[in-house]
Image (cartoon, rainbow, N blue to C red):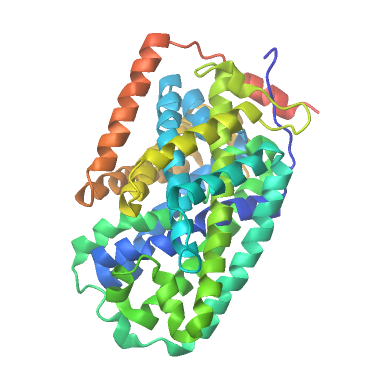
Length: 445
């Protein structure tokens, strides 16, 4: 453990909630309604319910492991420690594609909504937004988490205004039969609608930086899930009831078109403002978790050790932040198609959920000392049942999307092959902290 770089706890319970809900309640509600309505029509309401069920399983597994072994870069370190180092590497290697895709689709939708009010150059504005969020993360996690809390509060106020003003004008005829396009159509919409909840576990990836993580991490994730479910259910129902699935399916800014019904000309500042706040907030959280996964890989030696350097003044993994920034900027070369980008994010994320769920199973079966540290008082048997169920759901959701667009699967598969070839060529030694060493550090005064 000589030279082990450990990040300091500076995030409280509110920060955990706003990181989780702030990541989930963001770009998806402004973008995913269009492809979901194209695929499932009004059945997207059922799709949201179906997509939310496995997310409860994933969040339970993250809460269980996060309260037992909080560590920054957890989505890398848990599979590395409890399954195999190459699994941790592969998951986090694929997360590079997912994080880049997330930041690109976020900035893309940001420009689309801003274009309703201003004429802006697409790629240049996307680059400015990416630069801004990485700059926040470079100068300190408290700054990034504080910005997240402020943006989250503002977004909830704006979305509440949409729901309260729009609800009295909802027409049931606009919603129509929920199964009009068939059960399979609803199923194919689930991978897109799952993106509504992606990132609910984001705080687990900054576990070392959370004060009293054993308590605040599971409690914060639970509160984030409840908040996210209420917000999405209300907004989706009102949007459908205002304009119907056909109009949502044909719009590049579906919530804006829905808001025009109750707000008229005021819809543009309201929804554009909400979209800007939501997207910047989600981009901020994505940059935070992206840099921490690179930091964890550098700390373990599977990527250059420079990624594990901590800034002497700002106490941030500044090299990892800059590396993530360069990767995100290169993502501006990807196709500017929301469906393509959402699937490119979804596939690696489902594989990450599957690996971390299986990691939880291994802890329950083989590591009683770590199991006993968890604040979620689940028996080992229940952890196994829930963990295997979560892993199965993640695999199923990841595969269903092949019916929508095969190209993201080709991109992710190619990137995985490159990563495995890199692993075989370099054969990096796992110099990351062992389970015993992590426990010693966390239990020391």
